[in-house]
Image: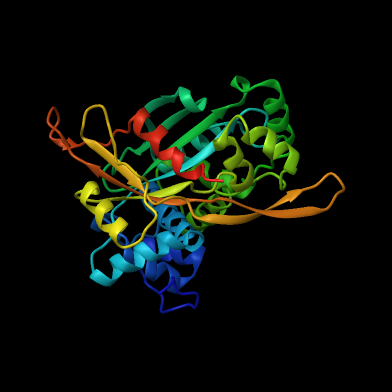
Length: 343
């Protein structure tokens, strides 16, 4: 069963109200029934906190990914049927560290969004094989229970000149999805740690627009020139800053991967294990999507390309702190990125 589309009865909780304002009451209820949400984030308040806004945005982005990725929807529905909630660990997105028109370049386009919501950079992860760098944004108030954001950026200057030129033509006309109303509401949240319900609604609805493609459909010639030297750049050319994947935290990712393979899911061949051994990840291969490309004569063609995917992670306790290991691993990330490289 897919997420519902009709409206349902209003829920007075702050989180439910914020999410319903962005996606509708029925879909908000479906999402909040699906995800494991800390009790502290479900209370009622006339002035939502930055944590309320952060979890509402995450829940809306999780729903968006389920809408776009059929294999994710299949898995999520199977878990719902068991009655167990899904622990949403993190969402990931890709950005361009290069000319981006009106959009701030690279990770800064999202740092300006995430900082007012209570996020800070908790780790820097070089990805030299991909000519990229990843940053993990962790929530200061609820680091274990509010999902992290893993924001990576492609360093266009490290690509060959022909690919750099193609990237500038693709991304150079990007627009900035944030308007004055969203920025003013974010400023209030950054200053006070809370905001009015109206401002919180403005933030959640407005920020959802940031997680999309901000540039026109790419020219097919430019797409191919960029794709030749960066599969990740090619992915951003068609998908923009949409959630590249959403990740469920599970007790035993290795056992789950075997189960899902047996059930016919197209799984990544191997489980990635961090250098410290405490973080293990795998994923369902990216679903295929149809996207438009511009041709030299001014017409368009449509091609099938890799879309987003669903990931699984197991995190062990760090014996030095007694806390859940919330770190990432450059090797793991490089291996996981490969699931969007199918042609």
